[in-house]
Image 1 (cartoon, rainbow, N blue to C red):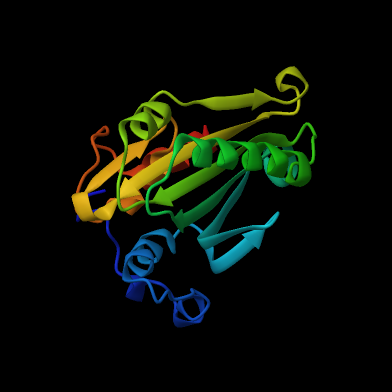
Image 2: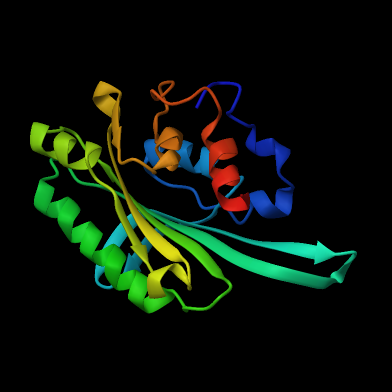
Length: 204
């Protein structure tokens, strides 16, 4: 994400800004300022016994129309659920536990139907220190599951590990949201902004 991608929270109506939480943690507060334009955000979120400093939801429905909005067809629902928390020195086992949580949430939250196109579960770990095993695990990670052989869409689990003190971010293949957590500058990605690429994935 470049400075040109960063938007001023004052662009949002006051009633929307008032619904956006603030964090005592300056890092998460600044990340929240980047995500607030696309996600419904919460702080101190708990799910299945796990706690997360930041939680976000992004939902969109796409549809095709035949001459008139009332004559719509091919409705598709897509969503991303974003979970972020601090772990001083994460291990591969910590990441594997988050992947397992993602599969459990998919079982709980996804309603299989012809309208369901895709759901993403993105887990972000904010660390003080990164180890080589963690780096290798995240860089080589991709977890995509088809539902009813794709008839009911799919879901994907993404991993991001970020170390703000060393300005380092490691992301799995499809974790575009990682750029929102790189407050110091650009991630080595294509020139297009992460929000633009994210929207394209959900609208095409």
